[in-house]
Image (cartoon, rainbow, N blue to C red; front, side):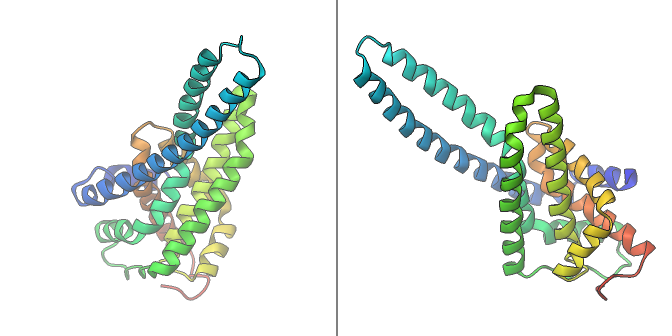
Length: 239
């Protein structure tokens, strides 16, 4: 695991990765901005209605001040929400760039091995969308845990590790196995996959740097797939 992490960290800022780094990070940022704008519009509409409702109840209420405080709280909530949803954005982005990232990892570290099969665009988009929706569902369930201070943060971090490990491993393994085979492989080696997810979750927790998670996560899981392939035969006859 440590060897795979170090190799992934070493390659993320390398010259061959720079172009895909700019594209994937830029797309992830655009997704987060879009989510933030949508959330801001919805919250603004709700605040306007709340302020008008309060004003109709009692003219003596400091409605202007209340509206300002609500708007400030909503703005902070949008920023915090966008940060918490970064793993969802990176899961979606990873599906679009998995082949481009994996090709560079394989060219550098595994030039003698048969290259992985590129994912069909439809499969990549479908699996990426499913992964993003799954991530969103898990985070929605884990979000209330944040009310429990330190314990909640730990549990949310573990939820992120589970989701990211699952998403990135399956996307990487699909280059060497069928979709069903990649999922079985992940289930068979769930402890190792979760360990990789912990590393990706820690990477995501770093402000700004976390936008490069698609590169780090994909590179890390390609290395883990190669390690598994060196220890055992493919489970479905894949390359």
